[in-house]
Length: 117
Length: 109
Image (cartoon, rainbow over all chains, first blue to last red; front, top):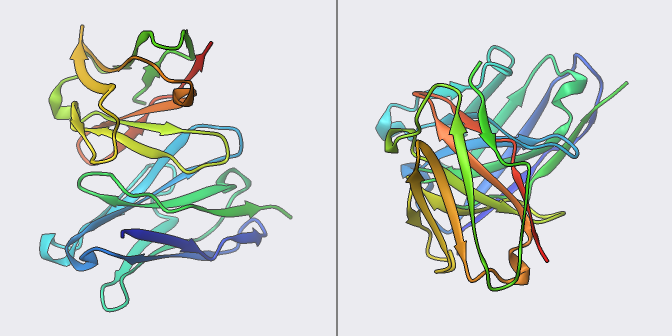
């Protein structure tokens, strides 16, 4: 059974950093592209970025709204994808989801990040 | 800035058929935008329904189908069930980035 479990969310002050973790199981993580999405309270969905498998170059791509602030990485030995979020803004308050990509199919349950002073 | 547009809300009767559409501000939606459709119910994570225009996931009910219609991506529900009441989001690929539509709230009444 494919499972994606996000963790690391919580309350953080503006300007600070936070790292989210997505722990995967039930599929060959090393071969998979992983993506991150978010959803602000009461709002729609937003794509944040992706990281390809190392076999596909391990390259990353980001939405303009988070580029240069957020970094996606992976540890294939642990089947984990990370979302490092720096210089957080109140507008980054959202539930963050990791998703298996190519195609986009399985979603985690999400982790809430609240950016507030 | 690219904008993806969906109907804000639609209402359908149980057993009826409804089509949700997804338009791009850049022009006609083609298969090259790899349209995806997701269903989201309150308090739940989104669930993937359709990828690459018309491909279903193993869990996608047969009553859901995806297509291209009049320059837009479309999601058609045939024989709507009460449990289909939800928010539906389309997602389009723009060469390196994905952009969501604003979502369609589907009411089954």
